[in-house]
Amino acid sequence: MAEWDRCRWVWNECVAKSKQVHAWNKNRPEGIDKRTCGPAQLDRMLTDARARTPWLREGSSVPQQQLIRDFGKSRAKALKDIKDRLPQHRRAGMPRYKKKREALPTLNYTTRGFRLKDGRLHLAGGIAVTVVWSRELPSAPSSVRVYRDSLGHWYASFVVATQAQPLPATGAVLGIDWGVKETATTTSDAHDLPHAEHGKRAAQRLARYQRMMARRRPARGQAASKGYRKAQRQAAQVSKKIARQRQDTARKWAKRVVRDHDAIAVEDFRPKFLAKTTMARKAADAAIGATKTALIEMGRKHGRDVHLVHPAHTTMDCASCGARTKHALPLSERTYTCTACGVASPRDKNSARVMLVRAGLIPAGVEGTRPPGALLPEAA
Image 1 (cartoon, rainbow, N blue to C red):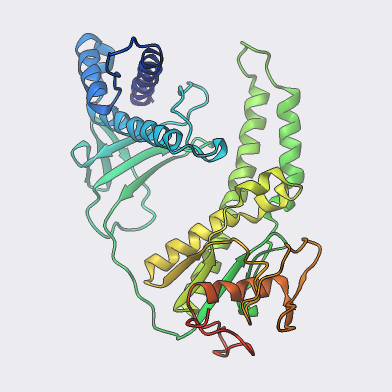
Image 2 (tube, helix red, strand yellow; image 1 turned 135 degrees about the vertical axis):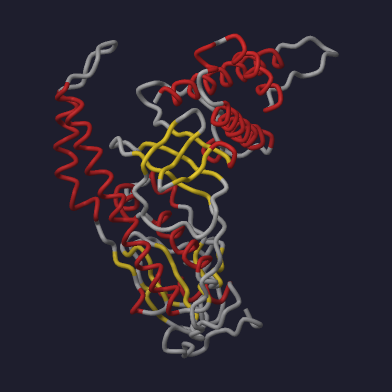
């Protein structure tokens, strides 16, 4: 924690310097070049600060320098989004101050900043910790991130080079459409992912602990009471369990899908906009983003082809003839009927087949058959 206090101080100094440079550039006189606040300038500031501050010099320079690199990447991403004139909700925000009681500790160490010996992790600065290994490392790690979660548990995450673990070919392909009623609707009924509702089942317990926190919330400027901290930890435990249940469900489903299919066409759906709708609570409980990420990672691990399909007009196109309706279908209409060829099918199933057509895959499920009148990839 002492190491984290030093790194947090370095981060906050970088934020202050960035704000100072931004204000100067905004009001600079004509004919004078802009000032910069890149990693090189911040590295020189860190060297000067370590020379003048014994407290800062007591810690290792490795995590402090890595924090400057992370700050530079975060700031560059935010500036690029502003330059590209992206909408406000899609921009990466500028780095903010890390407050002592809000920011979770995280320390990054490169190769020269750590070593593994006798099952222990030795970090730069004389820190040695015992690690409970979840599995053996497949190769020598190039970096490690030591962090603490909301429950106070510490973890070490290593970056290692891995190799793909190919699975036997099956000759089958699958189309996937994301939704709220069902998390994933596929072209194969056996691989549909129903809404698990992990959050709904735990909502009563979570609301109880949140009410306890609201009653015991300390006044501004006062320290939190023991009862408030206890209720806060209980709420964090429930939230953590829900997140792990969602992750476990997503990984098991993704492994089953990847094992049974050679190629997968997935809707490249970004559910962020659902947070502003009446379906926000159920959409968040469905964890579409986490499920899609688990599927992509599982496909990369086992050497499967995962095609990301643009979601525009997928509910308006016909998977059989390719015709498009003149208006968007309301959510209450769950059956898609093509006005051109007359084919009728469940709305989500039709969208799943559209994924296959757009990805250039023959729309076949695990049965290996195409629906009547389906377009070949060349015709699509």
